[in-house]
Image 1 (cartoon, one colour):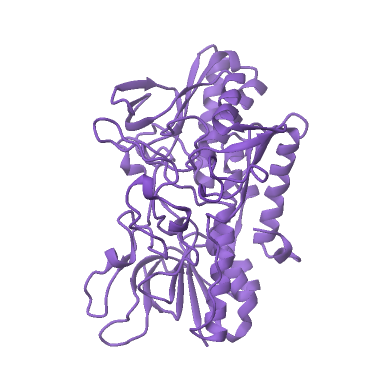
Image 2: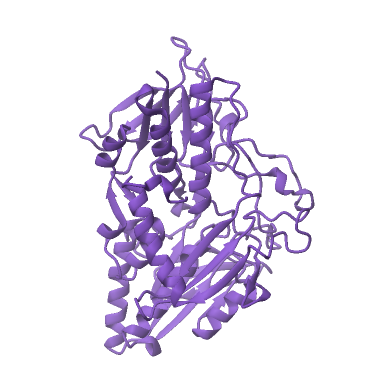
Length: 490
C-alpha cells in the first residue's frame, strides 16, 4: 500500500486529495494534513465581508467529507520535510504539528511515498508595519476578506461605518493592496465594488469617499500584465474596462503604490516615480502579500536543504525555468507543466504553493529600488486544474510505476474564467465576467496581445451576478463530494 500525503485542504489540496482517493480506492492511502477544520469557498468571502452572506454559508466541516471519501484527515500544519528520511530510516517523512482533534501541539512524523504541497500562502501581514492581521488584533488599523473569520470582522466594521454615516459623519474607504508585492488584486477589486453597492443600498453613498490603492502600474493589470479582450464585439484593454467601472461609480484610484506603513487612520506609500505620500481612511481593507508557509527541509544527515526544495519566497520549486533572467528573455515555456520537484521525484506542488518562475506583469521598481508590481495569481480555477493534474500524475506513478507519464497543466496553455462581483442582489446585482486564454501570455503564439482574443472576453451585468451566485452553490456542492461531483469542472 502506498501513502499519498497532501498538505493543505484548500482548492488545490482538496481537489488533489479527493480525486486521488477516488482513483486509488482502498488499495492505497490518501492523507490530508491541514490546520483548518473547515473548508472555505474563498471567492464568496467578499459577500460575507459586506454582510450579504454568513460564515456558515461559505464553509463546511472537513472531517465528515473526508470520512465519506476514505481519506485520513489530520488537523495539523506541516513543519518540516525529510525527503531522504533520516539516519535511522530511508523513508521520506513530513513532521506535522496538530492544531486540533484534541491533539493540539503534538508533533508527529508522517511517512509518505508521495507528497503534494498545496498549503496555499502565508498571509504575510508583517511585511507592512501596522497592516495588522485582518481581525483587529494588531492595532485594528485594517480589515481583510482573506478568510471567513476575517470577512465576518470586516462586515462588522463596515456596519459601524454605515451607522456613522447615517448619523452624519462622513467616512473615507480605502481598498486595495497593502504592499508593493501583493497578488490577489481581484479580491480587493470585487470588495470595493460590493462596498460601493452596499453604501448605495443603505442610502449613504453621498456620505462616503471611496478610493482604490494598488501596486498595479495601470488599472486592470490583475497581476497578469493586463488583458486585451472582446467586449461587445470590440477588442479593448482591461485598463479601459476597469477605468470605466471605477469612473462610473465615482471611485478614485491611486496606482503604482507600495503601502509602506499603516497607522490608525493613515497609510504611508511610495509611488513608482519615487515620490512618497500619505492617505487617510476611516475604513481600510488592504490585501496582504503572500509568502510560503515556512516549511523547512532537511537532508538525511540533518543538514538544512530548505533552499534546495523551496524558493526564497517559501514556495516549492517545481519544473519551471527559474533562470530565465531579464524580462526580455521571459517565455511562456518557462512556466511549469507537471509541478514535480526537480530534486525529489515523489514531491509535487499545486496551487499557490508552487514557486512561479517569474512575474507575469512587467517588473517595475521605484528610483529608490522598491519593487512595485503584482505577483502572479494562482488561485481559483488554475489551482483546481493543477490539483487534478497532479492527482492524475501521482495515481499513475503509484499504479503504473516510476515510468508513468506525468500529466500536464501549464498556465501558459490554460484558460481561466473569473466572475468578479460588483454588487449582490437577485435583480439588482451585477458582476464582471471575464475569460482569459492563456493565463500566462504567450507572445510567440499570439503576437501583440499574448492571448487568443477569440477566447478572451468580458461582459458586465446582472447575468454575471447570477453566474457568480450559481458557482458559489455549485462548487460547495462539488467540494462536499455530493452525487455527480466529478462531472463539475474545476
